[in-house]
Picture (cartoon, rainbow, N blue to C red):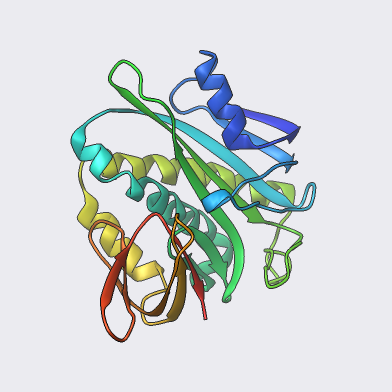
Length: 241
């Protein structure tokens, strides 16, 4: 079920609250026209202008297993792939990904992904998968919106993007649950432009690593060549230098 609200602190946070209160179920989605406390990775803020972004979170309740826990990073990566696929009828090949969670359009940030695991219960592993993309406004320097790039961003077009996104998220989540990681890895290799670029990686602990991003491995981690070593990083953020 899709629920739409005008303003909320965070669509991810609200879906988590509803799940914990027993008021949400697998597949529920929440869309907002504005977030007052939108969140990104590593505690960063996600900033958008009211009414100028597509903001949505989806709750998936998955069968808990050691295999799934070993591949949870692919839920976020897969959600990014889902949005790339949803945008292709509008933006074609001009949209791609920057590892691990940025949606890019013409080399500028169009939006981002935030996946969050909730407390497992009764053999289930609930996860909230959130996405925000700029449709008709780009409030952060260096970002871009669909309308900035000359694409349609009217209500009907945005609704069609949302419909496709929900379908594509389910397809990528199913691939993770079914252990079809090779398929996702191949798709990510095609659509992620980070490999081959110079990056500055910020880890969850706050340390930084600089070097050339060489590849994304089968576990979704980024391999960075620092010049003296090859470092495998996950649970981090990467800026292009």
